[in-house]
Image (cartoon, rainbow over the protein chains, first blue to last red):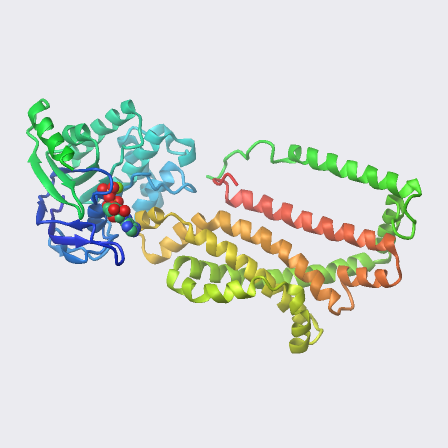
Length: 239
Length: 259
Ligand SMILES: Nc1ncnc2c1ncn2[C@@H]1O[C@H](COP(=O)(O)OP(=O)(O)O)[C@@H](O)[C@H]1O
Ligand SMILES: [Mg+2]
């Protein structure tokens, strides 16, 4: 169960300032995993905001499945850079927040929340509040919460940017694993070329002002390809 | 589910330094009053003050004044806090409304409640409703400002996350905006309570026939400094008690916040 996403001749800006984004048409097929790579300020978060429905385009169109995006919706889940967990709810409570929409009985909601936390390896932290969890654990909760709402598209904005290298690698394998199991369409924003190559089947390099697509590469399965890395690094560096 | 341990040093142990300071002040007061360097008509001894306090407690005057003042301050506070919170949530959440009303609030805010006493008297007379309205008005402005500030600082990512998780408007309000703003609301209520006491004194000095501040004025006319000291002591203790109670209640509800 996943939706494709289409961006058609998309422009976006904030207020009366110059546009920050001018994209050619882009299509993300159902179940694909795409990394959006680019330097800070090139408009990566804006792209996610447009797909999430937080930001309205000044021109062009976003569609998820066959429906134009008109605002945020649970079929498009978001994992935020700074987790955006509710500090007044426990880890379990945060996940249950996402489950409430499904109108399940309490016990079932609770069972599913615990299962979702177990799936991200956080079974024992279920009763803790976000302030009592490390950054990596908080990001696990955020991932479990986003997935619990059963989104068909998962939007992730530099989700592992604040984690240490080891935790980061662990979270990357966890994400790959979850994606393979669920087949959710993933748009993953990062400014780390190695993270993009480790995770995604496709890497889109954004850059310029206003931001546009500088390069669009398929990442072949198998061992890392140093030539592809060098090529993408050159696109990034040409900024 | 809310069984988190309370932070250390905030219980009875936290009272230690405060009691120490109170002891020092009391000792200095005692020494000064007994040194003979200040006329006894101007500075009562702690003993005489305590006696005056016991007197008014025995005669029932203290209970009557305390009751009258608490009732005014409590009703005015409740009215002002409810309206101020509602306005704070509205303007804090909707920047358009905020832009429209901010100039009005900026103009009204520096006018102290006491300056409004003559106008309140002209409009509403010297009855109870005039006093309640004056207190409510002062509390409303204070609470509004604090709640507005807190609501407008609620992280946009919390509200966005809630929308992306499919929470309808009602749940976004009760389950996100309300708890996210709760620490600010608590601070607003504590500040509002202190403002209510200030406005209470202003309202009672402007014409009343009962109440703690009314009694102070009467005692002042008879130069009863011992009674005035006792009255001030009661006012101060009332303020401290109200704040401690609100803080304790707040810590139960806002257990996740450090402040
Ligand atoms: N809320 C906003 N208001 C005004 N300008 C913004 C806002 N958000 C982003 N911008 C601007 O838009 C551009 C792209 O920002 P963003 O999409 O956050 O880039 P990235 O995520 O790649 O760092 C930047 O120049 C940034 O300053
Ligand atoms: Mg960004």
